Image (tube, rainbow, N blue to C red; front, top):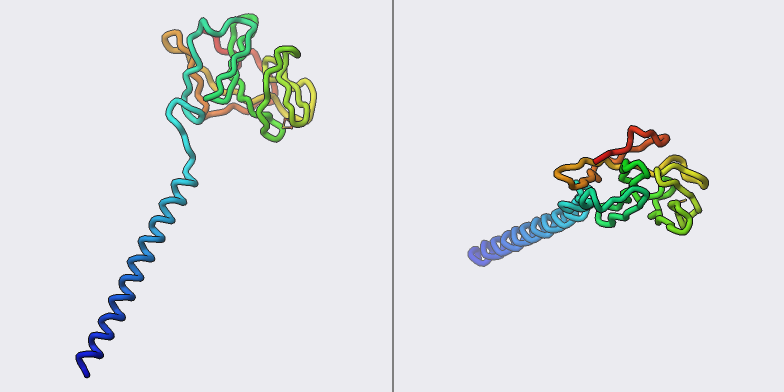
Length: 162
Ligand code: FES
């Protein structure tokens, strides 16, 4: 009789231990999955890191080029100066398309309009389109999308030249 009681207690302890291990494994997996979900996804060479926009000669004066993987436009002004404009509207964050027919950026959400330098022409947007720093290495235009520059207005010193 004593032996059977010991076996019962032992079985109970074993089951409690097994449940404990199973719960620890479950919480561990859940925590790991949650961490992976919450961690910002910065893809090498994509938005959130340095993005290769292209070779300098691809950006002719007076043109706007959308670099989708970096979420910015390269606006090459008439004097050859370049700006990397984040395509995110400074009002509520909609993606702002370039409208070739208007010669302006025109946000479809609430009609903010921006010039080729990103300045606000009209609409509820409170400030110009944000900028990303540009560097040019061996004739390649590289944009650092990890560090947006919030600005109150356009200033010629914001341009980058090849
Ligand atoms: S989000 Fe662009 S105008 Fe409102």
